[in-house]
Amino acid sequence: MKNYIKIAKRFAGILYAVPVLILTEAILSSCNNDELEIRQNFPFEISVMPVPKNITKDETVEIRLKILPYGNFTATRYYLRYFQFDGSGVLKYYHEPPYLPNDLYELSQKEFRLYYTSSSTVSQNFKIWIMDSFGNEKEVEFQFDHKD
Image (cartoon, rainbow, N blue to C red; front, side, top):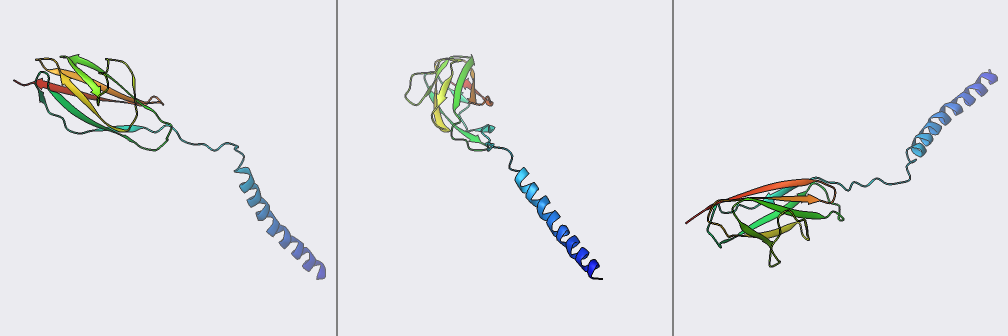
């Protein structure tokens, strides 16, 4: 009978040791990656405040835009380019020189204002593309009809 008790005690000790060993292996093996993965590439949306539908020659319209990323990575850079399809006018950022069509300009803020000045007596149509340093891109189109 004493032999059975000794065997039962050894068996119980093994039963306690096996789950502890399995748990230790699971914890240690889950930490095998030396680098912490940080997500840097977040998609974004563009919010545009309403703008007038009609514009006269030499009139300036303020365009308020805001970049709304779905995450935050401080090293992300945003860029802007535009192209005018119909009519003619000038697009600029505050008091800086006017933007040239299809040139890429870095944006210093996520919320900013652009100023479009018409130099045409016909309808005007242009697009603005905003992209980030990871290749994500959004397009916004503006159309102004000429008013007398």
